[in-house]
Each structure stands twice: as C-alpha cells, then as structure tokens.
Amino acid sequence: MTTSTPQPTAVRAGTGLGHGYVHGYSPTEARRLGDQADTLAGLVHTGTAYPPGSRVLEAGCGVGAQTVHLLDSSPGVLLTAADISADSLAKARARVAAHAPGADVRWHHGDLHRLPFPDDSFDHVFVCFVLEHLADPAAALAALRRVLRPGGTLTVIEGDHGTACFHPLGRAAQRVVDHLVRLQADGGGDALIGRRLYPLLGDAGFRDVAVGLRTVSADGARPALVESFTRRTFIAMVEAVRADAVAAGLTTAEEFDRGVAELRRTAEPGGTFHYTFFKAVAVNP
Image (spheres, rainbow, N blue to C red):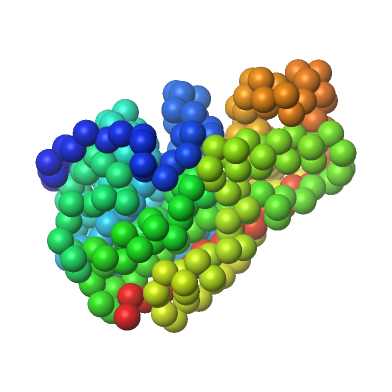
C-alpha cells in the first residue's frame, strides 16, 4: 500500500542544497544510483533492521534506490520517504511499486530542513548519501532530531572520496577525482564528509554515536565488484562531471579524458580499486 502526505511546493532557495545535486538528475544518473544501491546493499544495509510497525523516515530517498533495500531488511515498517525532487519521488514510487507493492509507504515532497511532521513523529530515521550534498548538514541533523522520538535511532551512511585508493595510481586519475570533490564543494556540499560524521552527530545533540567503516575492495578476485562498483558506480560518477569540470576551468577535455582512461585501467587485469563508506548510528536522548 502506498499513500501520500500533502505535497508542498519544494524550492531550491534556502534548502541548503547549494547549487544543487552535483551528479544531476538524468536517467543515466538514476540508473547509476540503482546500480550503486544494488551493489552495496549487503555492505551498507547489514545491521539495519527495524521492527514491524516502526515509524521510519527515509530523509532524501531520491529515486528509491535505497528505499527498496530498506523495505527488504525491515518488512512491515511504516515508512515515510521524503525528497525535494518531485521527479525523483515519482521514480521512487514506481520502483517501490514494482519491487514491494504491498509496502506501507507514505511519500513526502519537500525540504528536509522544514519537515511538516510533529515532534517525535518517528521511531527511526535513515539517511543515506544525503548529507554530503547539503551546505549545512548540522541544520539538517537538527531538523531530523526534532521529528525523532526520544530514544529513537538515527542511521547515517556517507562516502568519502578521500578514501579512494587504486592501482595503478595515475596522477591524471587522482586529479579527476579531485575535480569531483572540488565541484561538490563549490556547489555547497562535501564529498569528504564521511570522516566528519562522528563530530557532526555529537554536535547535533545525538548520543551513543558509533561509526563503522564499510570498505569495498574490487580486484581480479571479485570481478562482479569490478564491473558493478569500479566501472558502473565510481568511474561513471566521475565521468558524469566532465562538462562541469571543463566549464569551471578546472581542466581541459583532453586532460579529463586522460584521467578517466587511467581510472579505467584500475578495472583491468592487475588493477585494484578500494573505497570506504562510513556508517553512523546514534540515539536521540
């Protein structure tokens, strides 16, 4: 069963999203997000399971790539999925309808800084790959804490592009990764936010903050990960900012393409690619 909350008009101004989602909202990006979620499901969702009947908020559900895995790991929850993009929400609804047609999901279109729900509305809040895109993640965490009941849990999962390490290590490859980090910073986000989760949650008033590392290692012994993570998740994400990096004067088209070519060699025989995600769980006192 899927139902809807009232649909406020979402606006970019004042949302804390800076200049917007650095990866864009193209169909290609939607597919990449789906590939990423499917590839990482066992890695990032392990240990996250809410009891049936729990009121759960997924803040920043996007195209529903994580939503379907959240529903798989926690059947019977009363889920509210919220996102600022109406187009992404439409894709999320379609994905959930196809994957879990009987799930109890309420859809909310709006800014997570101004959620219309009463205080203490949820037992658990789940946030995955969202804070990295916000200009003021501390304000977002404060808004989420307001709607989380005392004793309820917050789960936050973020990446950190500074943890990407690979072989062969080409200078041009490292530069294109750095360009992605710079573009996200210029847009008001932080592609290195994983390492900041512990102090961010503590400063926001959460207690019992515990941060664990979830590392992907893709090499010749794991060919499925080489294809699904190195090629279709990480390299695809870097390739998508080519035009923006050139337009911003960070590089030339030729230099960018050289860096991507070096990155692709990490997915060839003899290459390796490693990346660490940060998963934090905290309690609202």
